[in-house]
Image 1 (cartoon, rainbow, N blue to C red):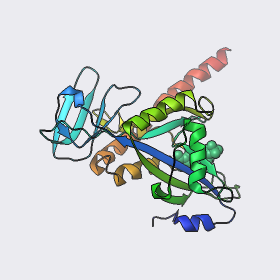
Image 2 (cartoon, helix red, strand yellow):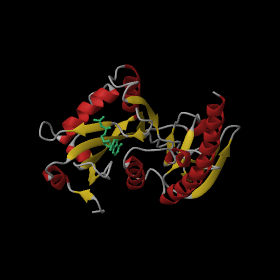
Image 3 (cartoon, helix red, strand yellow):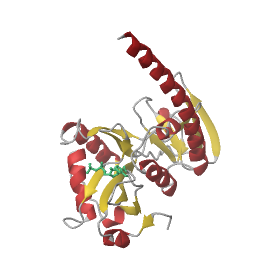
Length: 265
Ligand SMILES: O=c1[nH]cnc2c1ncn2[C@@H]1O[C@H](COP(=O)(O)OP(=O)(O)O)[C@@H](O)[C@H]1O
């Protein structure tokens, strides 16, 4: 067991600990890539800014595809059969501007971890999604939020595979009937799993700010479920670090702008 990780039983036995449960929802689907490229075992994700995004699970050869908007690098095995395995992991933009998985605090003395997580999902997604013990992946101590914080937080992570239509239903409900929409949850986003020339896609996504250990939960899940090949992920993370350096420069330029304006007004 990795450091900081606990078994479910150890976690529940911790007296005075607070518990938070979050879930990664994802789905596979059949799809025709650009209507003509026969590729097997790819993961295809739609994201906010690019129409069709590609990522890879099985690496045999390298293809490159380009149009006026995108340069996508794919490792893929070709097949006669036009069957595409599309994966759609979801995260949310939280009220605090950070990315995270749907879920929240659960009180195990009043409810099971799974029923508490389902309750949180009804508020955030507008749907009662049953979560079971089998969906549980791991439990670990969260880093203390401040040196003075007295109670320790244990985060429990779940992964639930759904079908594509269920994911669409979640997206529709999250934006229309969910009580938390526009308040605690600013919107659901699909994770772009592809790597673009220049570092777009997954690399850009991973360089955003995440709540708690949500980024490592995402990275571990991508590896464990073979949603992204380890080499692709390594490349994406290396790019994310470069993006960070660029973001720092950008922020410094923006800060200089506001400093100039502060002097004027
Ligand atoms: O996606 C996540 N992965 C891991 N930990 C998270 C995630 N989202 C939130 N947390 C942690 O769990 C705590 C409680 O989560 P959240 O803010 O969702 O609960 P709440 O909506 O019930 O207040 C947060 O303060 C944060 O430390």
